[in-house]
Length: 122
Image 1 (cartoon, rainbow, N blue to C red):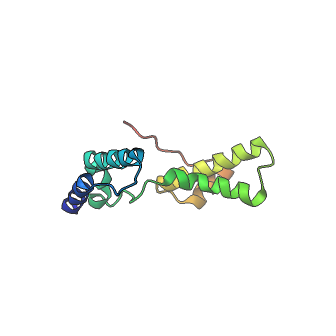
Image 2: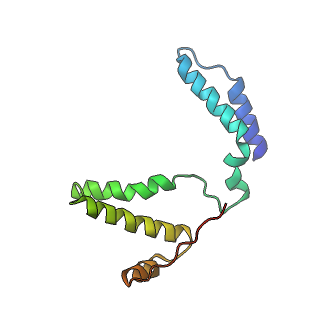
Image 3: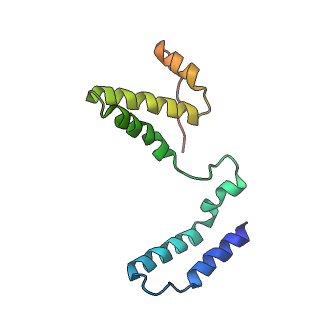
């Protein structure tokens, strides 16, 4: 896998852009290829460590529900309601990321005894 990755990045760096491609685009492509070359270990980490997700799209997934709520109801009725919605979603997202079951976490929070959130060190 690593050899294929290195070969493809090297081919991309050697390739000539098609005629008519703006210079700015060529520079962006080259910068991306150089970044992929420099950060190979980080890019391919998911190949060696199966606990690492293939993509890093968690932030978008966390925001998607807020946008969906806005879309279906048109808006939040109050700023406080939006704040509460985000706080609940953030708590549930954190519980999922820490491998906790969402239902007991939500039940505990409703009873005034939320599950504690482990803090990362480092």
